[in-house]
Structure formats: C-alpha cells, structure tokens
Image 1 (cartoon, rainbow, N blue to C red):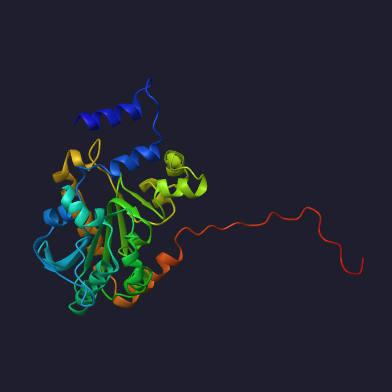
Image 2 (cartoon, helix red, strand yellow):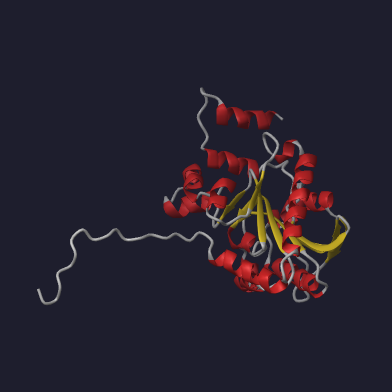
Length: 297
C-alpha cells in the first residue's frame, strides 16, 4: 500500500518531480501485485485442464494452455506464466517463453480449431526469452509460425494484454480477431530500457523512451492496434482484482458473441484486413501552384 501511495504521489504531487504519463503506466503494468494471466484464467474460466509439452522438445514452464469452460461453453485458454516467488520467476524466466512454449501454444490452438472451440489468450510478458538455447532451438521461427497459423485459424480468437505486451513474444499470441488491453497495460515492439539503450546509448533515458514509443493503451488504440480498452480500478487492477475480472469477463462475452455471428470465411477476411490496415498513414501532395510548362513551350 505504501508503495502504491508513493507512486501516486510522485505522479500527481505538484511539489514532487513529475513522472511522465507513459512511464507511470509502465510502472503500473509491471506492478508486482498486478494480476497475472493465470489469475485471470482461474477467475474467469472453470474446469481448466492443462496441456503439457510441445511434442518436440519439452514443456516450457513460462507458458500454460488448456481446455476450459467459459460461461457454459468449452473454450481453449492460453497465457504466459510469471510466478510470484523468486524460485517460480527463475523457473519461468520471468514470464518470457522459450520456442517450445510458443509451439505448445500453437499445438493447443490447432486442437481448439479441430474441435471448433474459441481461443482466448492472455499476455503479460516483456518479450520472448533471448537465451542462446532458445535461439538454437528456433525462437524466431516459432514466433513466425505462430503469426502465420494464428492468422488463418478458423475459430474466433480473442487476445487480452493484461500487463506488459512486449515485442514479437507478445505478438505471437495476439494475432487475434479482437485484441483487448487493460487501461494500465502497455504494448510495444521493444522495452523502454532497450529502446533507450539503442537510441541514446543510455538505458537511464527509459522515461524519455517510454514517451516516444507511444505504447500506452490510449496510444495503441489510436493506431488501430487494439480493439477495446478496459478501465481499471483507481491505482490499477491490483487494487480490486475481482471487479477487473468481472469487467473483463463481460467484455470477452460481448466480443465472442459478435464474432460468433460471422461466417468463418468472413471471420478470416476481417482478421486479414484488420492486420493489413494497422497503423497505416496516408498523405497527399499539395497542389503545385505553378503548373509545369508543356514540352512544346
């Protein structure tokens, strides 16, 4: 509680140094007491039956997937795992999946497609795990494969960014018909620390990078990268998890109902156009005040 109050004071007190809005949101997205994907899964769904392994290398502890029930309907749910204790965090690489984690998620998605079950993904990760072993086992290929296969799944897909949505590691679970964000979550191609290190050769410029990246829910929605932003309790979802769970469940139901009304071919076409049109900008040239002389002049 003291930490929350200190953060709020730093943000709003006229006598204290002002924290940029983007960085304040980043701190809330990373709050250690913020509900993690599995918290949402356990609160919103019932009868969760976990699937283990990718049938190729192993069972990534940073990724969880399984069958469940959503308000009486069988569905597939997928989310990355961070862990609360230090031991859990280390085992789960602080929520950053290895390639076998993404392959396990894809295996679960193909099972869902086979049985015509909607897919819900929950995302709170800084990025895919960057270790040597992960690269040796095809981290980039695993992410790319998920992007491709998710784009053509013949069942409704809904992704929710509950905290930090970082880089391709998040996108590998977010090529969905509907992408939702909690109000204090972030969605970016790179962390602010990584951006600052590249752009200014100084990771301490992370607050400046956070503002430049435009990765808050409001900014990302304006770019058309997400479809719905859910308000959170004052100070963040960690202050009232039950109300956050209930509000998200209602929005998931709303979007699922709207997707259910679409024929499969239309569902795929709209998903394709959605991602083709994300963040497009159009410019027009001003009219030339002096028309060019004709060739014969």
